[in-house]
Structures are given as C-alpha cells and as structure tokens.
Amino acid sequence: GEDVEQSLFLSVREGDSSVINCTYTDSSSTYLYWYKQEPGAGLQLLTYIFSNMDMKQDQRLTVLLNKKDKHLSLRIADTQTGDSAIYFCAESREGYQKVTFGTGTKLQVIP
Amino acid sequence: ETGVTQSPTHLIKTRGQQVTLRCSSQSGHNTVSWYQQALGQGPQFIFQYYREEENGRGNFPPRFSGLQFPNYSSELNVNALELDDSALYLCASSLEGALFFGPGTRLTVL
Image (cartoon, rainbow over all chains, first blue to last red; front, side):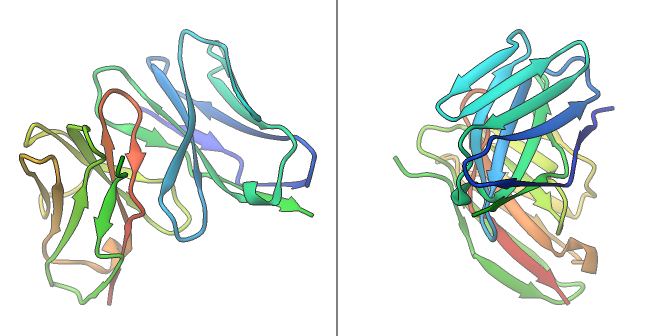
C-alpha cells in the first residue's frame, strides 16, 4: 500500500536554507506534492513534481526527486520566520483519486 | 477567482448526532474531495466526487456520505457521530491533478 514518511521536526535559523525530506513506498506514484499548513489553517499547495522529473525550482523552493530511492526533498532558500509552519509531503497515482499525505514536518525558524 | 470556501468554521456536536459540512469549489473546478485531519496527523482521504457521482472512497464507514451539486459545491454528512470523529475536515477541489484546499471545518464531538 501507499505510505509516506517524514521527520517530525526541523529547526533552522532565519536566513539559512531548510531541507525537508520525505520517503514514499508506492513505486507507481505519479505526482508528488508539497503542502504548507499554518496554525488553524487549511493546506496551501506549494509545488508539485511529476515522477518523470528529478528537479523543479520555483523562486526560493527547490524540489528534488530520487525516484530510485523513492525520496523527495524540499529546499527553502533564505528561510524566513513566515516560513514557520507544518510541511506535508504527499503522493498520488494517475487515475487514482486519493492523495496520500505524510504526517508533516514542523519547521521552526529561529530569528 | 474565488478559492475553496467551507462552512461552518467550527462546530460542536455530541455523540450520536448528525452533522453536515459544506464546501464551495474553486471556480471552474469540477472535482471535489473530502479529507479528515486528526490532530497531529496528515489528512486522510474520505471520498471524491466528480460530476455529482462518488468517484473513489477511502477507508471510512458508510455513515460518512456526501453529495455534489450541479454547481460543483459539495456536502459531507456524518451520521451517528463518535468521539473519534473530532477532527479538521478539509474540502479540496481540483481540475486536473493538484488539490486546492479550503480552510477546513473544525468538528468537536463531545
């Protein structure tokens, strides 16, 4: 079955880069997503990558995909206090309705 | 462009009661999904609706049911509420691929 795992917590200093890691088990995953959730809010789609890509960059965000190891990472450059939130990795398969989420990584940015 | 909206924001119910949660899709999106997010967990897929038909269901009992209307808005109904149903209920709409979430409804069952 599908399973997505993430570390629970990451603490970085403002201005440093943050790297949030995720592993997944479903080799049929087609889409891999990163969502951000601030306290008391819904989920905000940050970026997503197709499984036939190995990298995607969008301003301060860089997503790296190692399909062989089923490893996904999100790098946030020049991390700001406004980046403090919970980040969810998620995956889905083409033709399937379900998106499977990890348990989330809480990012704490220290001023 | 209006994003996904949900109502109510918060709700308190007692065990055994029934609840209806509402969602308006993002403009132009014809698919709506519902997710349950327990405290400290990632969202869990409940079901998805496409063109007013259920189009996939997660591991939730039949007392979780839904509707999608011609304007693509949707309802989630939960009967015979249990304490474990306390969670944030998230609605998401999509056109192709990525999900766009609403702010959620926080349901507390006492």
